Image (cartoon, rainbow, N blue to C red; front, side, top):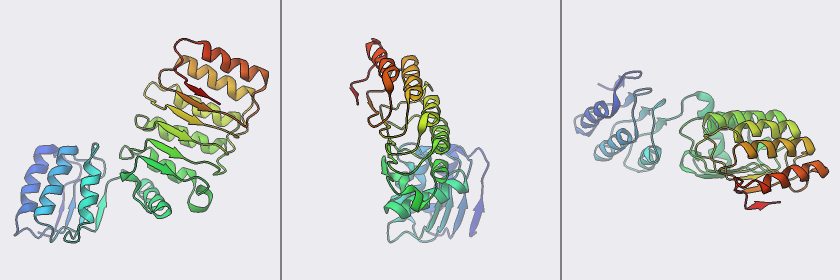
Length: 266
């Protein structure tokens, strides 16, 4: 046996343990294993990594798309892939090809695999490296655990802000800090971000939107959404925009709200 396709089954952790016992066997010559959409969780990833450390000589391709690696699953297998004794050359984690391509593009741009990162700075890189829509395919995948994302001065327009907001609504639970200053958000971009901020699953704590062509209308939208869902935001940076008297008034009213947690406002 050189190739085993088991995708789309109810494998779970128990099934993976049995498969891992096969992979540990020194007589096993399996080279390709497909386990996509098999309800495998973090414990299963650990079992696979352990088995392949014990018998690293044969498996070359492993497909785990559509499973849940938890906090450590991806790292365990990518660390294994770097082991010079391991013959594993291809590991698929992400659900779709667009996310796989975005992951490769980000890795090429910053020299590190974004699935292992909690912070990513692509400021001034998006136009040259790849488009914001490509990045969004990665952001909306559950394997992406980024907590801080910087996209300053990337020429992102309102349309791009809509794509970002949509991606982060799909996978909102990890992101804590967004630095988007120096883009062309405009009021429409702020309204798209507001849809993210009003999501009860959004845990965003810091938002930078300096010099983003935001007017009174955008300030009003931000104040409104932070009044309705104020539980996490502690830092808001809006310098270099055109608040006008009404924009300042809206934010001042927000600060007077006892439920508002903002500690820093620029």
